[in-house]
Image (tube, rainbow, N blue to C red; front, side, top):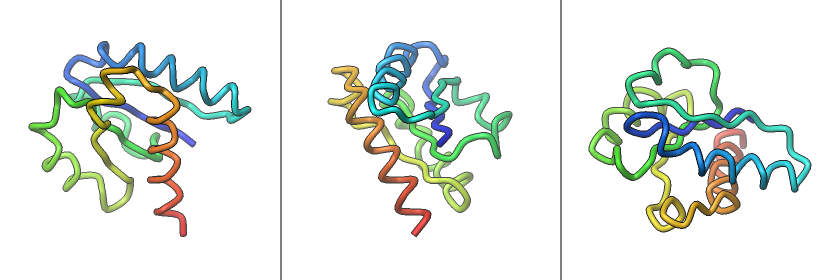
Length: 103
């Protein structure tokens, strides 16, 4: 699975990406997980299976969801998971979004 996170500058989610990668590795899952700024999302269309947005870009959620959700699941990262850098919980959310679209 390919999971892309988007935030204001693409940097603040870096630590969360690392936590998610660590969790995926622990579970022996070969996922590609990376972060970009919201302005760069268009450049990656077709390269991600799930798009998760950081809480700091909540203002852009409706526009981004409308643009991409027909083909790719889009969701906001829960603020508590983001604040705690809970990679396991965010990874699970991404998996559930992906699975819900497959069935």
